[in-house]
Amino acid sequence: MAKISFQFLKIFTTIFLILVWILILNFGIVPSSKLEKQATDRIIVAADLQIEQGGFRGAGNKYQEFNEKFNVFYYRLIMKNIAKYFKPSHLVMLGDQFWSENSGEEDFQKLKQKLNVVLSPFLQSKNEVKIHNISGNHDLGYGNQRRRYNNKRWIKEYGKLNTYFQLKTGQIFLLLDTLSLDNKPSQINDNEVEPSEKKMKSVKYHQELALNPLKVIDKVNKIRKRDESNHPVFLFSHLPFYKPDNNCADNFDIEYSERTGRVIEQTMLTESTSKHLIEGINPALIMSGHDHVGCQYLHSNRFKEITVRSMLAEYGGHFLIIEILPDGGFYVSHCGFITHLTFFFLCLLSALWVLILSLSFVFSKKKNQKNLITLIKENISQKVEKKINEKERVKNASKNEKKKNGNKKQNKRKKNSKISRQKKKNQRRKKKAD
View 1 (cartoon, one colour):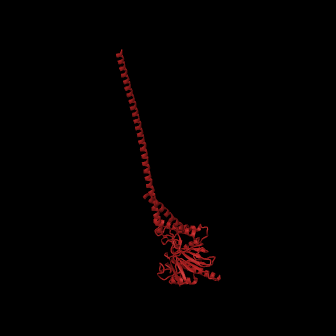
View 2 (cartoon, one colour):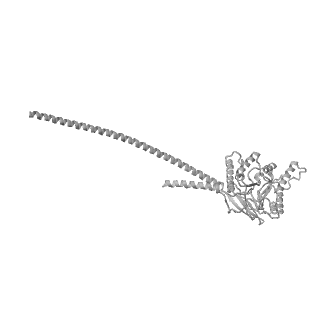
View 3 (spheres, one colour):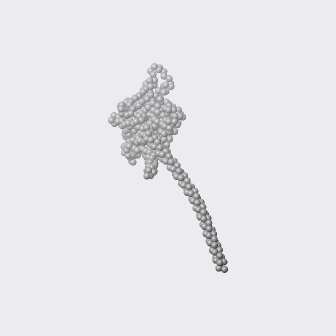
């Protein structure tokens, strides 16, 4: 009975684990609401993948190498499911795709290759998926870290820092590089009578970085005015817009360089910058990243902002789907995958079960071998016993034959002796008669 129970447990657990892995690898993503079959476009929005090369632990660190490989595998698995089941028309990456703000050319190329592996399900898809990459602080740095070479390198690989695209149904998706918008305008020290040409070029370049998003906004507004229709605008930015404290995981914080007046670090855009952008665009929806935890906020009780939760494994592989309907309406669905802890737990459980099955097989094999040896021994023992019995039988038969022959000879001798005595007796009677 115990043997039958263990066999059933082995079969049931094995089938269960196989089904769990099939579900995770192929159907692991579940949207928060049912997808609209009539949707004309589906736009996937993902934030803060933060792919690393070497990382803060340094190249050669085994844990770091494993972590980097796992993240690429994890993200690719999510993208594979997205491409297969949601069939999006666009993918918008909200910045911090990887850590490249201080990377040399070699590391940047390695990071680019890793991102290409992550996005390969879209690049190999039969359905054309347009990928849009917004830059984040880990991609190019905050305002004070921006370098001309890094920006050119990014633009060469991923296109303009500020851009937009428009759907056939009229909706405009505006993608802004907001990392330089809060730089202070006065960047030249008043004590400098004649600033160097290099410094003047740097000041001018950073001013252009701050003005470029505004130029694209003006262009979009001209399109809306030209078409004489209030096309809804979806606004995308890596940095979240200003919110009062305790509305998201991060409260407002900004740090400026005393030397340049540019931003060293910030959690969100300033209140004035946020207000200027919102009033200048009147967006139907604002989407931002950077925060990792994610939240929702209503600006001026009218303009909704979704700060998208990070796709990092510890945050559950989160992303959003915007579904555009034929009548111009839209739905937003939140989607998630399993966390790294759940993933590792299942890996550990599966490995442990494989070990149990292996040990069971080995012990079962040894038991079978033992039974086989016992069987062979019993067979040999039976054969030996049979031969011994056969010899004994032959010996007894021979002995019996000899005994039988001895008895015959004895009987014959007795008979001959009796005949001889009879003859002698007859002869004596005959003599007497004569």
